[in-house]
Amino acid sequence: MFGSGKRVGSSDGSRLDLVGIGSMVVDRIHRTPHMLSRGEKTILRGVDSTEPVRRYTGGVVLNHLGWAAALGLRTGIFGRQADDPNGRLLRGAMDRLGIETNLVLDGSASSFAEIFVDDAGERVIYMAPGATSETTAEHVQRDHAAFIGRGARLSTEISQLPLPAVAAALEIARKARIPTVVDFDVPPDEAIGALGDEATLESVLRNATLLKPAKLAAAAVAPEAQGDPVALARALRRRYGNEAVVVTDGEAGSAVSAAGFEGFVPGRPAKALDTTGAGDAFLGGLLAGLHHGLGWEDAARLGNACGAACVEKLGAFPEDVEALRARVLELYRGPALSLGSLPQAASPVAREALDLFEVTGEQIAALRGRSDPAAFDTAVQLIRASNTRGGRLHVTGIGKPEHVARYAASLFSSTGTPATFLHATEAVHGSAGQIVSGDVVIAISNSGQTAELLQTVEALKRLGAVLIAVTGGVESALAQRADLVLDAGVAREGGPLGLAPRASVVAEVLVLAALAAALERECGFTREQYNARHPAGTLGDLSAASSPSRTRERRPRQRTGTAKKPRRTTRRPPAPSP
Image (cartoon, rainbow, N blue to C red):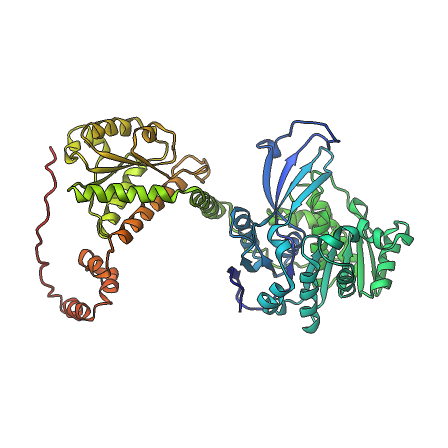
């Protein structure tokens, strides 16, 4: 039984090499010349020589799952997100890297972080954990136990996920005899209070099969080791009884304390562009090395190679998998590896196509958030008042909106509100004669500034038309001439150039479809009435299904091919068009 939130998953139910719960974060990266002190100001640099901020996929757990996937592991992630733009960006990245998901979308917001990177590659991070911090032990037990059971190993974190949720995941894995990994990313004094109490923290650290602390966190637990990475690893392993402890020490390398090997493994040289997520990449490489049969020392070498490859680029998540895998193998100094096939990532061409879904989804969600219900009420009232007086509804547009207008007129007509398409450029050459005073005209234009449409609108207004504008230009010339404006604006179109109408066309179609739905409800339109207008095809069969007598009438005609001619009905003829 899953929770009340919307759930998304991508799974065939087979065994996974590694499953994880924890941070899934959109990293908003800013480039700054240097880190500021109190009271200072500076001008941000362009990220990738473009904008001063760029969004990247990130998060402690998602990052190391991504690097493990890039090195051939079947990985999966579970937990909580929100159905918002950041969540959609993260889920798109998971899909591209083949990371399976078991996510409940009931969080207040998907996690994000503001990251400032200086010219030396150092960074500061301000985190907004959102849905990750809202995950409870009950959520884990109720929603994700079966997914944990599919993993050959479970990884989690002490960073943003509440300690009771971490403890619950570890306990499910322990009962299923699944080895566990805990990334100890923040010092105890930050974890206690923000994430849980001291007793739960101690329990989490003891229940990790493999404990991977950052040096700063390890030093806070074992100050007697005086900052020596190997002594820290040995002290934590002795204290908590883990099978292995691996301490990361930045570019210097990593220390391992495990059965069969204890020592320091030097890092690989790299020119740091952004040190964000280097420890996450290390852990992904370490786990991949262990999965592929390496001993502890060589697995740490592979982890160090991943950390070095990570800092050479902006962002922590492995987006360009082929290039990053090649770079990791170039940096790695150890036994030969057979990593298997790369994750089934989309080609650049396919990714362009799939990204349009993300862009359009974001724009439609934003439009829904700012849409005014009162505007739809007013539009329905204007159209119904015109109908009552014998007026008619017309829909018009130029360019791509012309095609939208034809669709909308057909949709209105099939759902109880007769409407006609008005050719906008022909209107000023005589076709405006189909308008009589009191008719309603819906004019569609993304910009609201199209000169030909504005000329047509002036002619229609002189003939007494009531004008409803469907436009992204809510302050445009078209909007200024309209009696009512329905917002259909988008900030981005999508596509390689971002120019061709894509998201804006979807927005216009949805706004008009929403208005048609409101009119259909207001007039009490019935299935029988729909069938009278749409008797043929699958929709004809479906709309007739509620009336057994009508269904029996139709089926013999379809089998024999002897359908009778439809009965003619008297309709008001349209006004002549010169």
